[in-house]
Length: 251
Image 1 (cartoon, one colour):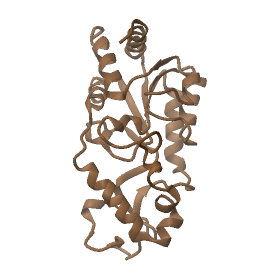
Image 2 (cartoon, helix red, strand yellow):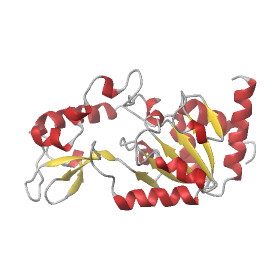
Image 3 (tube, helix red, strand yellow):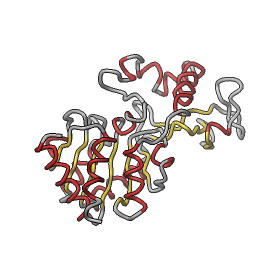
């Protein structure tokens, strides 16, 4: 790292050490180091697939088999994915009481797998399905997938991935909880989000307006950078490992 990068890492560690209410807010860049492709950027999923064909309610109702095949393909790729070193760092911070809550746009469930149970999944969880009729919800691996589309075992309606699709609103109670956590934070660590997907993108702004220090980790500048107190231009696992190294000097 250059000297200026080193100074930023040290400053970020100081902010986190002094934080009384550290909240982490993440996007797809957090999962990228585990081998999960982001949605935007050079290798993003939306460069290869059209959202309107696979991630809308209209697409699902038009061809539920096609949509389920795509989601089951994505789920199959997750079976070989494990939380990377950055998740391990955050999990350790959570266990010792430094990190209070995670708000994530990711649907891969890696935070929960890493041992953090205070997680708000704004956009749902790809490993779950819910019924379009009776709202029954279940882990996908507990449902009959021998034929598609997946049918609800209770009412025999169509099951769909339990994620928020384009054109759908976020769950109001979940979003309100995320906004409240942002208002109560004194340091918000923003990792790997483009800051262009609303209403989730409001969360760092709410934190900033409430007096929170905003630390951004991203491989490139984003819409959040302009309000960040510290911008660290590294991948998530690398940046968190560096910060944890300096943070350990305070413990």
